[in-house]
Length: 385
Image (cartoon, rainbow, N blue to C red; front, top):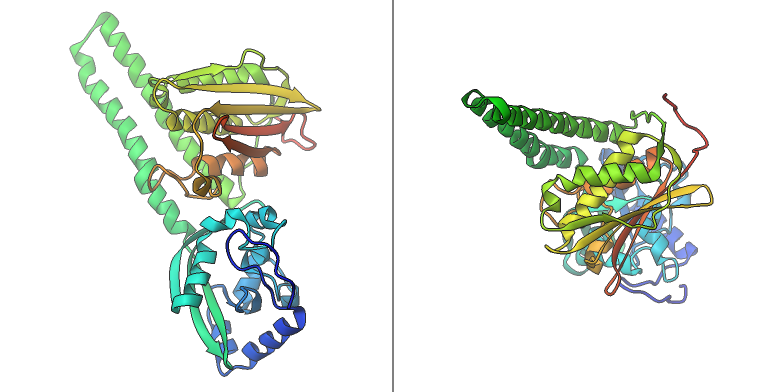
């Protein structure tokens, strides 16, 4: 058995390779266990006492994209999945031992199953290969040959969560906009002259907002299934940020709060998809405003260094640790169900389609800053004039 590394959460001990190999042999040869796992069409894997993978079925190997089961044997679940939290746990003992792991529902399910027999909960993983996974995670303790193991099953629930999001967020928003259009249209015949013109402008603005909401939803669907094709144009970074601030200033999130651009912001040409970048920046600015108390100020800025253009959004609100570790998780939100795609979509569009990176810092005295950075001239671009 290896020496015990330090841990910030779950036990860090591991069995050595020979012990894990013997455990895998025991599980594979246990009566009906391997056959039952192979008959199931969802990913299933078996963990030993120290949460190391000793056996799994074909759907599990397909999910993590490996052909050789031996390459996974002895890894913990997050290490096999490529969970981003494992990167944060490297100084300690791997999956389950970092501070980010304290909020991982999958680890909690395994630990609870070890103690009480079984556990089931929804889990969201952010993976290093750039995508996210949402699953119903079921863990069950079993005794195989006198040794305790935990059998874990994953059921993909992304489609049902998308359906929930459509019902609670997207449809709610477009119905509100459509209702405003209907109300204004019904009132229009009662007015003439300047008042009628004001109502016409209101209807036009609401129609533009409605079309934009529908386009945003379509973009996220395409981004999720990999069919999104960015169209690259050249923009001026500071002018683009100024236009985003103007857009958000008219949004209800900005009421009773100040939104300013840092006076020392820098300007540069940036080759990017204007529509995708606008969705990233508007999401981050809206989130900062919504997280701020009335009277607070949100500051946006743009900087240029070594061929990269950086946009940042700062407010004085601090993100709690238990929230910070899940801030980019798909469907995770502190604002209720159906509201958890803002930071997730910003990360997805930035990393997968705009060739950039996204990060944030949050400290009690300094507040919270979200930063997105993009190469000013991407190596490969689908350019439009």
